[in-house]
Amino acid sequence: MDCCNNKIIIAIDGYSSSGKSTFARRIAARLGYIFIDTGAMYRAVTLYALENNAVDADGTVDKDRLIGMLDDIKITFRFNSERGASDVYVNGENVEGRIRSIAVSNLVSKVSSIPEVREKLVAIQQELGRDRGVVMDGRDIGTVVFPDAELKIFLTADPAVRAKRRYDELSAKGERVSYEEIERNVRDRDRADETREISPLRKAADAVVLDNSHMTLDEQMEWVMQRVEEKISRQ
Ligand code: DC
Image 1 (cartoon, rainbow, N blue to C red):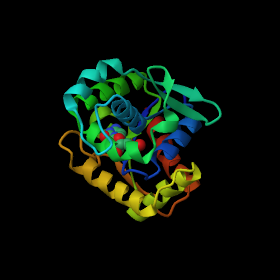
Image 2 (spheres, rainbow, N blue to C red):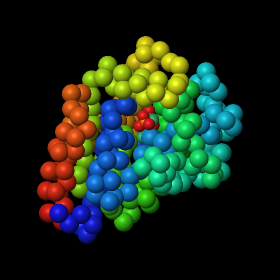
Image 3 (cartoon, protein in one colour):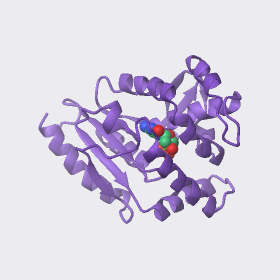
Image 4 (cartoon, protein in one colour):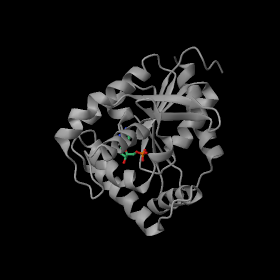
């Protein structure tokens, strides 16, 4: 398969902790494409807002302050060869290790529902995919960011399976959280993502659904590579 001419955009949307980023990263590595985790961008803005008093830990958002700060936030990615993935940076500082805490997870839905925040991040995402050859994961990639993406996947899994995955990920990093708290966060974010006014999480009409509750990553790769080959051969 000729992977590097005829480059396409692969949009992966879906519920939180459905394994979008791991899947997207693996597809990008296989194709030699760029991988962009757009959730990391919303998390990075949330962390910045938290550290600069535009949001407090109990969830109160000072919208005007946050909107006023947006021009000061420069988000970039840099490849980390140890992790085999790109880390996200805010104003030159690597924040990858801090954006997945439960504190950020609890606030990110609020921050990502602010239209000005979305406008800024969507513009950066569109620029990153300008030359195609990108796998981007998020909530609105197939519907808003790249409605013309050649391949759109809507990834889902049972909420209990997703909560267990997030719990294992945080426990492995040594963060002390209860499974119940994680499950609540997963369900709350599903609801917030699906019901927000601007760019809610929904399946694009032309997206294919993949429920990976009982699939290994290798099985998901086999499933997706067939579709990728079909799309690329039609370019
Ligand atoms: O993929 P994630 O769980 O790291 O995303 C964190 C949050 O960011 C998620 O709760 C919703 C928001 N998000 C969004 O609104 N739009 C995107 N394209 C990606 C993430």
